[in-house]
Amino acid sequence: MKTQDASLNLADCRVVVTGGSGFLGSHVVEELRARGAKAVVAPRSSEVDLTDAGATQRMFAEHAPDLVIHLAAKVGGIGANRKFPGTFFRDNMVMGLNVLESARVCGTRKVVVTGTICAYPKFAPVPFREDDLWNGYPEETNAPYGIAKKALLVMAQSYRQEFGSNFVTLLPVNLYGPRDHFDLENSHVIPAMIRKFVEADAAGRAEVVLWGDGTPTREFLFVRDAAAGIVSAAERYDEPDPVNLGAGFEISMGELAGLISRKVGFRGGVRWDTSRPNGQPRRMLDTSRARERFGFVASTTFEQGLDETIRWYRSHPAAD
Image (cartoon, rainbow, N blue to C red):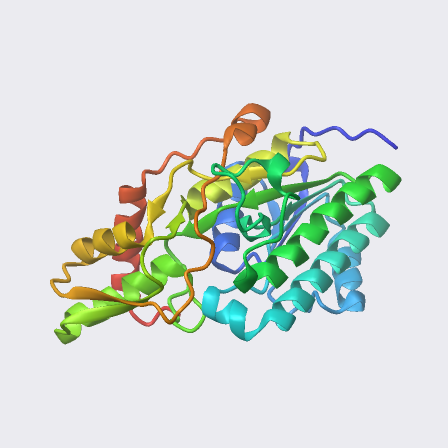
């Protein structure tokens, strides 16, 4: 296996960010440019269909990237995962296969692959440590998505072993922040709650209905912190081991609902629809590996991040 130099000077790199016009991707592009990257390309899905092997290969041939940050994914909350499990598995698996194979063929110097916390076993010990990744089956409602992403970790490690490909994998926790998707059919929990409470307050409703029973816990990472961690890994990390990206705390859905309702000024109540699934019982990451291997520590407090996200949504009421 050939040896790779992990240190990248972004100013000298041609960078492709798949999914670069999306929620996380737009922040990653900004972080890259803030750190000196001059040649950054973020093709839209309407321009390059990454589920098409030929289209993916042509994109690599055209841009000849030194660095690829693979963020493009088919994602959504519990509802979307339950409705489209086959689509989520197929599209995420195929996009990753095409990107990594094209990077190998084109001799791309480095690829950063973003996995997901959904890859962890349903009952993984808290906090989730990277070494526990294979000790059980993921939570059922998002298992197809999580397993597709976990398979790409195996592909990245296998290509490193056989071909010397410099592929690294990150496992971000649930993200939130400005530019998130607030469409209630597909959004994650924080944007969904913000929208529901803001709209209920504006309409003078007496209650907001939320999924589950309020007991599951989640950890959340502010999107700009996530972008900083991804770019730091691109610059400095070069090992086969997956690395968690998180903020190192957990909050129950009941506590989250109370916090958001207070912040938006909603004075009504919450009714929990227990006919709807809770999802994974607990989620919180051990974030020590990211700190030790490339110096990443989240810097935005949860209250600060929520305040900024709510302000952004109020100024973009049509955001979906």
